[in-house]
Length: 423
Image (cartoon, rainbow, N blue to C red):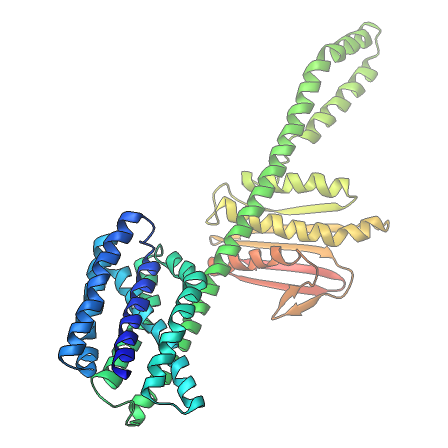
């Protein structure tokens, strides 16, 4: 009786591993492939039974990779046209067989049974465990088959190590059951290595994701600034269209003033029109057009908010800092200053934003000063805020300055918040 149960158990575990391996490859989806797979797999139990009856169970375990794993690998290679992922699938399925064996060992330990009970317990749990893995585990594994080769190898590392360890210490030798310290502590050692590797990989992944988020934030800020500039240009174009439309009326009015000798009134009217037109154009603060566009856009915003902005500095047309980075630096600095001044403007106070910049020895120097209200909290010299959505601008400024190998400083002096940077 024990002979047949042991034989059935060996056949069951081969079917268990074969079905799992094929499902991990996702290659049993068509009737043709299922027929090919099951036709080839039907030969494996027959071969196992022959080896088991002619030789012994121990001999069968010793050549198990040759009569089960190798044919399975060749079949899956034929069905998929790939070699690496079927190999990883077989190793992963072999690792899952440990679940089946451990549950049986637990039953034997609790019920104080023998080898026959272990084989019987393994047979009983085979089908429920297989269905459970096919339902919940297989879809996750199949997704990894589309990952790059490097990630597939990382995933298959643990199953490969376990496969070598299991055959080296349990099948071909008795190092594990003899209690050799090196063999007993090997898998905990592997778990420790994998844990440390996972921490290093996770840390590198976090840094990469943080950099990508920073780039995304910078792009969003550039997009926001570009939208503002487009809106400003649209307003300017609208005003120009209105002036062109009203030009005939203006000329008629001026002509009437001249005919009636009202020269001063005509001059005053012309001056008023010139001031309106002048207010709509981009103000020229320096030779750098990008800086002029950004400062002009914010000049209109702060004026509408009842805030004064003083700009002093010189920037050449071409500097080492790219236009996109200059846009982010100025936009974030002025945006933060504008938000800080809005409560003062709402309270009836006339706040002032002071902007100073220049280039010396090919280095850009920028200072933005604005009044600040409540106590500002600093962490490592950087202002932080608990309000959602705040603090992103400061992070973008710091990231750009660090990328250029520059320095920055945030401080509060006499109720004035001061940003200084050099890059």
